[in-house]
Amino acid sequence: MKVLVPVKRVVDYNVKVRVKSDQTGVDLANVKMSMNPFCEIAVEEAVRLKEKGVATEVVAVSIGPVQAQETIRTALAMGADRGILIQTDEDLEPLAVAKLLAAVIGQEVPGIVVMGKQAIDGDNNAVGQMLAALLDWPQATFASKIEIAGDRADVTREVDGGLQTLSVDLPAIVTADLRLNEPRYASLPNIMKAKKKPIDVMAPGDYGVDTAPRLKVLKVVEPPKRQGGAKVESAAELVSKLKNEAGVL
Amino acid sequence: MAVLVIADHDNASLKDNTHKTVTAALAISGDVDLLVAGQGVAAVAAEAAKIAGVRKVLVAESADLGKQVAEAVTETVVALSGGYDAVLIPATSAGKNYAPRIAAKLDVAPISEIIEVIDSSTFVRPIYAGNALETIQSSDTKKIITVRATAFKAAGEGGSASVETVSAAGAMAHTRFVSDEIVKSDRPELSAAKIVVSGGRALGSAEEFQRVIEPLADKLGAAVGASRAAVDAGYAPNDYQVGQTGKVVAPQLYVAIGISGAIQHLAGMKDSKVIVAINKDADAPIFQVADFGLVADYKTALPELMDELVKVGL
Image 1 (cartoon, one colour):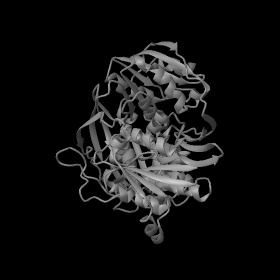
Image 2 (cartoon, helix red, strand yellow):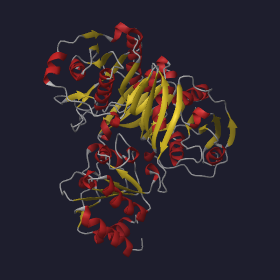
Image 3 (cartoon, rainbow over the protein chains, first blue to last red):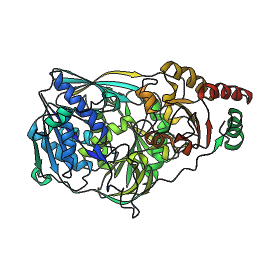
Image 4 (cartoon, rainbow over the protein chains, first blue to last red):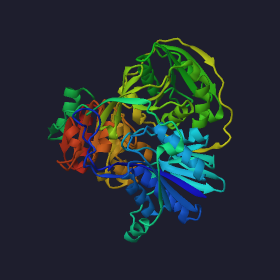
């Protein structure tokens, strides 16, 4: 079975982003970029499926600028077999991304798609669900455990209040939550090997889908700053202030 | 212009997220209907009919809807969508699961976790873990929107909407519900609690987390939360996690114990009315957002705090 893993290049999760003074977006100049953490978890899961003998091939797909090749190389160094880059400098919306991925899936015909539940830049948490809708495949989002049994997958999902387990027929879309696994660090020999693995470079136009934006960003601003920083000296002072000043007890 | 709100409920009772999402919907249109999709939801529908401003309550029932299976909710909502210009969905784990599926079926760009309605096509939403707020305008004729409920006041009671049954999607062919492991608790629900007590990695073990956090939560009638570090370390279950990737809370009082205050945690609680932080590291970032910071080891501070609470009659 082939596993397809979409991966996204985003601002590294340790970077404190700054909003541009002209309010057009966040400043990405000279900022460290990395693979989206949820995508890393998805790649790890796909590679584990291959190591267990469940999957035969892992294909990493990214949509983004030429530098997104590095993100695909990271996936290849973790154990993916080959990559597809749909190169574009446009910041495509989730709907357009889902349409492009659906077209790629039409060509690649994977048995399962494992992907991150959300990217930490746009925080939309949408592409996996939309991809499932476009393909009319079942979806199992926010996965903390995936067990493949024949032509179906039993997926434990993190939901409000606890966990839910669904059994979905394959092919299906599974999106990874934080506790699905702990992604490996690529070893130096594997990083070297990854340089030789193939990456096909495509353009959005190759797939003949409508990627026109539906949303217009009017402005991007910093959230209001919270006035904090006051200290109390003791538990007694804390309780007194909570009761008398703040009135929350 | 009419708006459909999808109710948040557990088949037994209506959740406050619904009232808050109705408020967001009323900012878009005066014609707001509410869909209760579930199983055995007559009592939920009766509660929903009392929300002020709701025109009518639609009830769809099936086994798959009772488990909030995304495919079933999507089919049900898509069938109803012709009569609405916007569908507003509370950004719960269930809502976040099915909203984009509905949007893609309708060829619409979903709008995730809005915190403000500017007008019927313009909304504000957090990006980059709440470190930036974007104002976006949708050109889609139909809007599929999830609502961060903590950003809106709950709609009041006093309505008397009509209740009617609508057809539910049939059984799903490719998705089967297997089981739920829902944590049973007498405490208030985390996302709706007036007071939240959260513990972090400093607590060091699941036993210590229970020994320290739970008695304080019980005394305050609070819900229990945790930082991602504490959840990842196994000190607390995953549904306790407060943060950008967990639950977003905005209680009257948030008490952070042994939590350093990573950006992603702050994103989930910085809209709380009053924030208390107890941490022995005076430089912990949590103190920058705390209204009342106590630099102390929780091991000594918590027993004192419990004693002081007893003195004021709690």
